[in-house]
Image 1 (cartoon, helix red, strand yellow):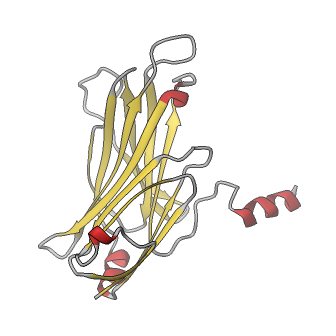
Image 2 (spheres, rainbow, N blue to C red):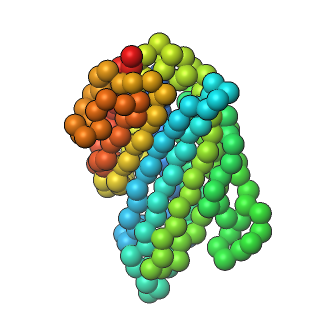
Length: 213
C-alpha cells in the first residue's frame, strides 16, 4: 500500500538506513537461533574516537552485552551476527571480541561491504547466560568526516535498530581541538576541552552537532 508506505517513511518508522551526510553509526544485531533471549539482554553502545599522529582519527564502536537470563524453554546463550554501519570510506582496522562460533577458539570471520551508501563491518558473537561480553569494531574515520572536523563543524547521527528499546548510549569524541558549542550540550563538568562526552540512551535516534575552535 503506497499510501501507508509513504506515511511510515515520513514518520521515520520504516526502518530504512538514514541518508545522513555527516558521521553515522547504526548497530544492528541479528538473533541467530537464540530463542527469545533478547528479552533478557541489556546493551550499551559506546562510540569513541581520537586523533592520531598520522592525521587520521581512530574510532571504536563497541556494544556491551549483559545476559540477565538462564537456560530455560525460551532463553539460551545469546547468539548474534552483529553489524555496524558507518560512513562510506571508513577504514577497517580490527574486531575485538569476535567469535567463529560459541565456545570456539577458531579464528573469527570478519565481513565487510557497502550497503545503502554506508560501509559496514560484521561478525558473530555469543554471550552465555549470566555473563557479560563486548564486541568492538575499530576503524579509521572516513576522510569526509575528518574534513568536517577540519572545517570546525561536526555532526553525528546514531540510528537505533528498529524494534529495540532504549539501549544505553555513551559517546567520548576527542576532536583534538577545543569545542566552542554543542547541541545537545554536555554536562557543565565537561566544558572547555577537546572531548564531547554524552551519556544517554537510544529510545529514539540521536543526533549531535558540535562546533569547534
